[in-house]
Every structure is written in C-alpha cells, then in structure tokens.
Image (cartoon, rainbow, N blue to C red; front, side, top):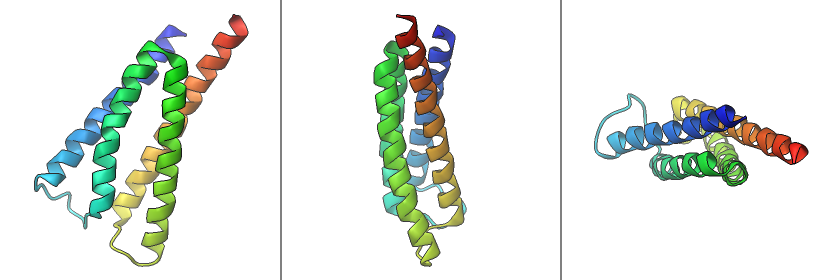
Length: 126
C-alpha cells in the first residue's frame, strides 16, 4: 500500500514539475507550435505548483492527497468544459490545448481514484 501511495505522490509531483517547466518556457517566449490561449497557459502553469504540492501532501498523508487531487480534478474539469465550449464556438483555443486539458483531467481523476482507494483500504483495515 505504501508503494502505491509513493507512486501516486511521485506522479503528481513530476506531473507538476513538467507542467511548470513547459508553462514557463512558453511564458518566456518559446513557441509550442500552435496558437496559445494565454489564460489557459497561465492557469496550467499556476496549477503546476498545486500539482507539485499535492504530490508532497500525498507522500505524507493519503487523505490530504485524496482531497487535493479531488479539488484539482474538479477545477480541471470546469476549465476543460470552458475551453471545450470556446473551441466549439470557434475561439482561439487550439485543438492541442483541448487535448492537453483532457489529459490533465484524466490524470487527476486517476490520481484522485488511486488516493481514494488507498484511503478506503486504510479505513477498512483499521
């Protein structure tokens, strides 16, 4: 059980660090090769910090990791809904941005479910 907790926490931490790195590169002028929707870029870069903090929390406490992952999942789902609407409406949201947000949302759903499963197992064994 501890190994899975560490794996989930490391996934969250690394996902956060990669998100921060990628976001900062674009913020400082690197071109990703598609049209950038700046509010989404800023959101994702800031969320990278939250992702990393969730990894640290999840390493120390599975319940805190579960709740943080749930919050991140909900925020990402709401943002995904917003950018999906903008994409369908013909706004400046690139397909790559929409697909990346789908990936983020699915990853955080999986992390939440993993932490929730661990919390449930811990509760049943106590």
